[in-house]
Length: 95
Image 1 (cartoon, rainbow, N blue to C red):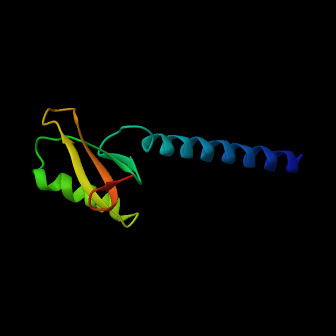
Image 2 (cartoon, rainbow, N blue to C red):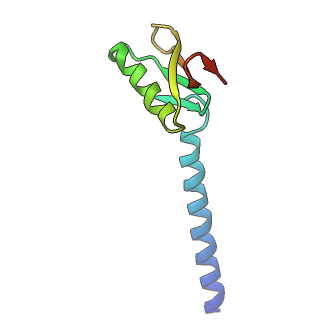
């Protein structure tokens, strides 16, 4: 009887922690708030209250994770649009 209770408690904890991880992972999937990307580049949500140099700095910090340089390729200064960038191994060489 007691063993069944422990099994039920362990199962409940496992299910609740799996649900929390799924919700936490959903935050990082797809274009979301802030910056989304991988080792080849990404997109940054345009926010009118940020200075233009902040986007270059965000892209540089993102690409620095993979020891790469960044280059902003597209800037659409409209609320809700994106600023795109690529990560490069050497200047002028895009993956």
